[in-house]
Length: 285
Image (cartoon, rainbow, N blue to C red; front, top):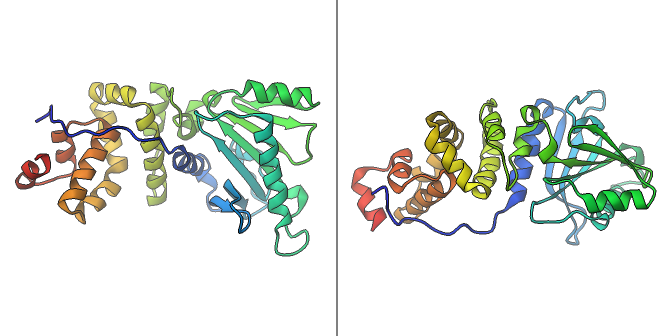
């Protein structure tokens, strides 16, 4: 049964949900003073920010290395490992900030000096950095993986290279990669997720990371039972809720999804989902 043919191909990886979850986990210590809006619509036209983070209390100092730049209105753009990051992408992100300001309900209700722009990518964007310097901009590495850009626009902007971040402090963003390191996975799984919102975000991060790094997750799971258990604990609530209300076909889908995400055999997946023996033969048929 462990060699069952229950399997299916990996579809296109949807990176952005993992990034949204990772960014909320990155700043979870400040979630009482931050408002997170994913795919914020700038207008009735198809213009959307990847993420808008609104700082609800201006008096709170954010000590997180990424959030320390934040003012009241913070525009974030994320580039997946499959996408480039060029000077045009940089200008577009800054342009979104200007558009967001211009669409306020009243004149200057969004103050110009309360805006920031953050661009995130897994790999250092050499082409973009060269272009910034070419046009007279200056780049300052303020923290590992965090680069401030000045001299081009007045809006404070930063480029975050997630692969260069400190894994102890930023594991949720570091594992959103095609080339994740085992130590970063372990740092992430050692984090505490105390609320359902944190667990949901952690689940989104793991879905992306495990799909993009199947071989590594499979090796770790087979070597280390504690890692497998940690993965199951994070994902168990969502999986079990789906199984409890599932039809036979959707239970089969849940088994397949769990096999793909945690790289389990069919038998191990059905054990994890607590599917009765009486149903297993039908699901495998």
